[in-house]
Image (cartoon, rainbow, N blue to C red; front, side, top):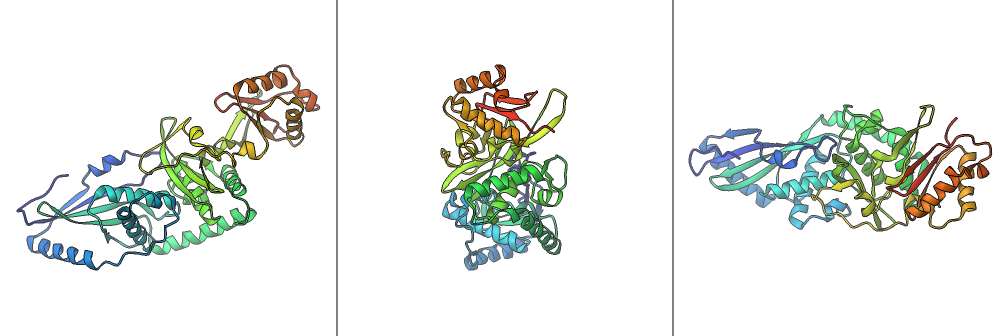
Length: 397
């Protein structure tokens, strides 16, 4: 950063802009720290006065209330970073113009803001921030944090009322007393069925695009998951990184005390039959992933420490009885028969590739599916060797 100096005693205010994070069009954060958006050279007598004011304020500032003790990202910070997080969050919620931080370390400020964004998916009225560095000679006197608001308080309140009404209607089919698994499945299906992935829509980086437009990108999905889970008493956080080499956002969730990963963006899948008809269905691979499953095509960044997720109790296929560990053709056939009668898609996940190939050969290649699905004339299926799955698509009219 270029310093503007007239003599050693000068106080400089350098204003730096910091944009939103963890979006589908994410830009390397380090680039923001190298860009000086605006600098200001202040007369000497004002500098001296400002320096004294800033030092006096630091001694008298009352720390804001700590309301995020149970939030995941907050818990990963040290006490200094937590204090800055509290200051930032308090300023955002009150929609204050700016606040003097209790740190002069820009890296602490950056980590704290990333954690706030990870823990709170509902901050739709904020799009990044600017910060001002006040220096006196070589001494960094203060950092001032100024959120970049996209709307006035009145408009924010109006939009919040609209969101509240929509969320209440969306969550009418689930109760806070239901199981964690049922809540996770409900929210996952809710977003898959009600929200379309669409680029270049308004407010795609926040929950407005989800609840008001039902169109969004990965960041909007991740924010909505965190927001909805917060209403249902489920701990969750937004995770950013890459997926298949592209910037991406998804979630860390906690079900029955164990952590899993969820990517609601990829909850909606589809296929084409031989006639070219395209049909969609919910893909449950990304509903409650282990770390190993998540890492098959997702790579989180290193900004927030993440847990090693190994639990499988709330895995969709195990929970729904569609995880196959033994060759039992009649049991498998019974599941396929039920799906056929109800015109549903059923995905079976197998414990290994040998078992998957045996099922595929018997039911598809040798045609034994017809023994269990009376009247079937065409088999629409998806074979997935990465996940060791076969999806039988019976949802054709």
